[in-house]
Length: 324
Image 1: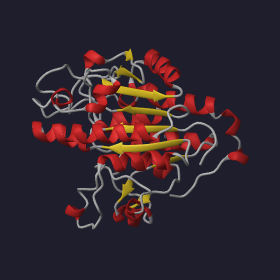
Image 2 (image 1 turned 180 degrees about the vertical axis):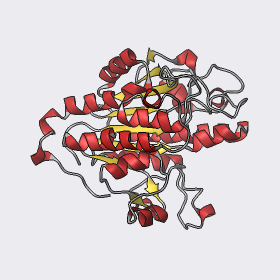
Image 3 (image 1 turned 45 degrees about the vertical axis):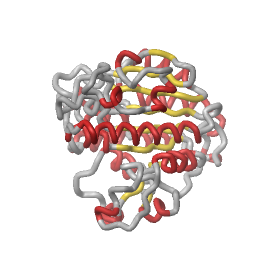
Image 4 (image 1 turned 90 degrees about the horizontal axis):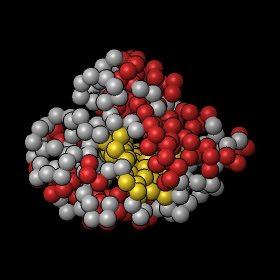
């Protein structure tokens, strides 16, 4: 277990703050966790920019002053570096990062920068075997921003064996997609997955987890599937929050662009994205992000929290990075 304060950073792909309506699954699905922390409200724009008893909810701009719908490659590069990636390119880029964004992630990725300050971080997601085969070849193909941030920092990737042993969480939360791909991995409940993520976080200053089924469900535009994705997410986040020591640690949940909050359309939206913050340094993070008001501020806010509250530990003698 680490000394000092830890942060859990959960990235949920493709969720924005839409209006309360029948096409918004965050309003139509049963979400006891969101309802509890938002004191009877749904995760929607009407509930944003308020401090609740245990959580704060901010609305963050994802357009970043660049024309066009926000997209994954530039949005995620922005989240994981603190730099305005759409402004750098002059447009929003979907899918995987291009060469310019790869260089940005290599130079200013969050894991690399935290390691330079002697803070340890981990990517809690489990990866399928092909990643480990391609690691040996030097990652020559197209990969997500999160994968590259971990790779450029020289951090280990968690495997399906780690997942079986409870030392990782799969991107779909419950492992239910893995048998469809030929892997004999037992399913877990959202609650079990949330407890595992919180357990992993006790050995690191920053623990990062990525979930992108939400964006896939948004692109499908099927209301029943969208509601199921929202309910799984709600139960998972409830377990993470309940299993963390929020008297000492901090939880931040955000996204790269809107999508799932409007099932009428199957494309991304211009809606702001949520930043849900709880824990010891909630007020500091809320103040920081409240001034920034966009997703460029997410990593700088996390880094500010970690450097301030772990200042006595940011020396070479105290640095460690445990293998998963």
